[in-house]
Length: 263
Length: 365
Image 1 (cartoon, one colour):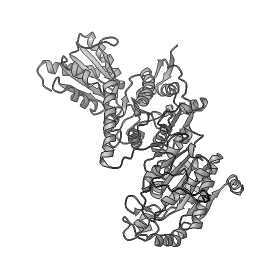
Image 2 (cartoon, each protein chain N blue to C red; image 1 turned 30 degrees about the horizontal axis):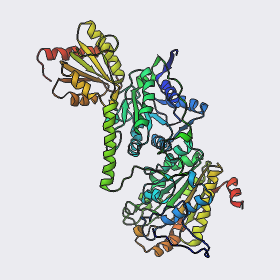
Image 3 (cartoon, rainbow over the protein chains, first blue to last red; image 1 turned 180 degrees about the vertical axis):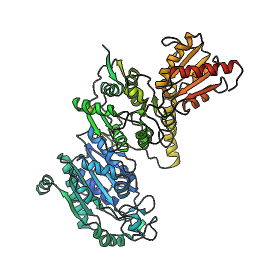
């Protein structure tokens, strides 16, 4: 990668976080995975925990997340990231452990693993990318696909009579006593991205203080599989996804609120 | 050290503690639950990790995670639970991290029953999961051997960075015998975890543990590396025992050769003793490693044996490996019981005499 000498007269206001590698991502133009990766990397830098972090990459488009996040990482089988994270954390309690999972991974094949990790109050943090579709396998219906949404495996639109309703995971996990901080944010515009970063930071802080399980659900786009232009996908998501998946915290215990209010 | 009376499952748990296991993740299933129960008490006492998972699928992936972190880790289950774990076995083998798995086999297929059986031979030896790999499979025939095999499984799993699997049947798991436990090994401190483990990239490059190799040639290189490792294991780690009359000794004079593993192998020790008392030149080869299999020794013995009888508590699984090893050198017959029925010594002796007479009177294979 080409480097540019920066004059000492300039103030550096924006740079690549140390927790991100210099690799170019393979993500499609318009995809929000890159944004989510960067937010995690900034948070790990700010909390100064990069050197004691172990991440779990998912099956799906982010399967190569370990090429982009500059931390030790393992690659889980589909849905099992919370179980792997549990195994790591239980034998390495001083490490900061997180999973990065998509909707098919977390809300379908790995439902048992995420529910029980949350319920145990496992000291891990989950970043949950909800883009309402199976991205890497080519755009099939996900557990979070909206009613009526057309996918390659719901060609006439998701019929809730036969396919059931989209699952609101943040609400579902929020009721579990082991979960201390569960929130849903969206990566559809700059204010939303800023809020998402604060949420990710708080989720990691909850882990660092030993409070319990934390998860940040990030509403995301998959413009390619939605067959939309990137900007159009953002607008569609704001209108339709947020209507079904309301933004905000579904769980915040007082000790987490105290961290948030701390300056 | 004085011997103590221990049940198989509890002995396995204690052997794991002595071998320095740092974490156990498991799920209850008969007839192995005593391993989990014992460790739920013992591991916290020792300041080590124990977790009862939500399923066998979760258990094995917790094991996978802890193994990636460089900890000495194990799980145990019984046949239906092992089926659920096969996804994890495949990932662990491809990722080349060490883990120990104990399968206290029960009757199958399906829910089957909770009686002792050996129906998981194929699963353990031939296809522990998708893709090309083998676990190292150890098959003890008594409680002392179960203890020794657990310790050995940890050592082999770490030496070769793969799965060390101990398969026994419910009879050994539930049986009490006088045994000697190994000395307590010190637990490896976290700062001495292996140089491939995920410990946080402090002052070094990051590490990744994955079983994903995109591109045909990329994965094939990995396959070739894994296969080379399996060949090394096959060359160095074959173990078996031979019996003629009382005790163990060479069986090069055996005309009627029994081959059996686990509980049936132990029963066949009695068969051989009884046969020798009747001046029948019988011998027993009991594989201790089911993979790698003692094929070379069998091929050697087949030169002078008149007939080989394989006895198993299944419909005939290991017998296929015996036939592969022996080829045309010697006829191979099979006697099996299923459903959790344990064959008795007299029953096997009767079959042995019959197949022996058949070959004398010219009966073919």
